[in-house]
Image (cartoon, rainbow, N blue to C red; front, side, top):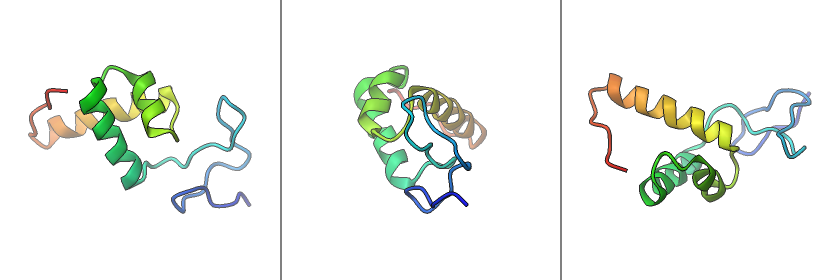
Length: 84
């Protein structure tokens, strides 16, 4: 069985990121999401490379997916798209 990854969630057994390090758990932690929001405000939500570097624990692809899902969720909840 894979050891629990940071945040208490298990990563897929044997899964690794592009850098060869163990993969992150599927769900973003509250701390990662808060860093994501800070970075999106500072750098703009289109700067996936900068946001990934700021968060420090997610890949550019994971940031792009999280950004897309975040804005879809905002639209469904009736929230206005933030000016970032």
